[in-house]
Length: 431
Image (tube, rainbow, N blue to C red):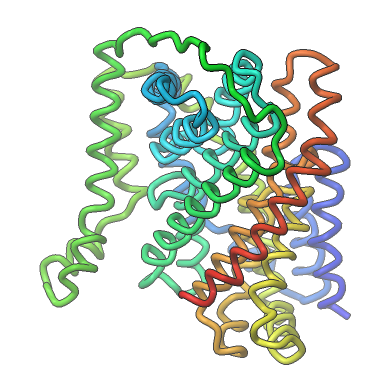
């Protein structure tokens, strides 16, 4: 009975959050309190202890550092330069939009930030180039998603944190690297489908003009260098550890490298260099995302205490054929993400299932992790999810919004979800 209540609570928290527009994490905390303390008999401190401190700290610290580049315009200008560099190949415009979005997201801007300033640019460029706006929107969405999956960027950091909390700390960097590579490959294939198969207005204007952005200011150049150095520091020793696993020195240093603590150190450097006002940087920390992820994490922790996740994994492991598991979790992730956030709801809810499921089926945890991520991100372009809603929000007229809605809902989402399911099946054969 308690397992049914917990599963119902997770679903109800998502539904209430969607219907009201309020943060899902708040309702998840309430259900964690009621079910944990009054149904399971846990002490309140035990329920509060389910707040994922490590995940919260990493999201806070990394976003704090990259907010300097957001506030002083470094990220937006970098995106415009990437687009300008592709000006000689107008027919490949969707790929230019993709790489511009992916590049900025990989530098740490995160999915929501990239969508917020790239979606309007993409729609304007599509208007000028007479290109299907759905294709441009999908390209930016794919770029923001796959770029944010980079190991030191927003989504990649969250994936690693969730994996670490589920006893995969020793391989979380490797797993996240594979997920990042898979998401890039999937995104490029999906853009090809949209551009040349399902998209309208396939002939792009040959005479469109890209204006050259203004030069980087001294402050922006400094910030860009600081970002590159920070990424190098965080990536260097994990890569060296893969190359030289027997080196005691490399192993020791790699064990002490933490992306959150490193980001705080670089944030202090940015403050001393006066790259952006402290108040503005702190205001842009994604508190809403933090509350959502950590609140759902508390409810998931109650589910773990109740044995709900082990029960679900056991059912999936015994009831589903092994070859169906990647398909099932790809589709489950897609359905959940259709209405909710991949980072705030889908991954915190499904990642804890992986250890038991992998043990029950013998499937590599990486296959299940990647199926969840690719599947969930495939439906993020839904008008009811984060990506699609941001696209609709940037439409300049009601007519444009009215035309975009059915294209996203009835073309972009089905094509993306079906493509993701096929991709996950094929990818599982090579992992």
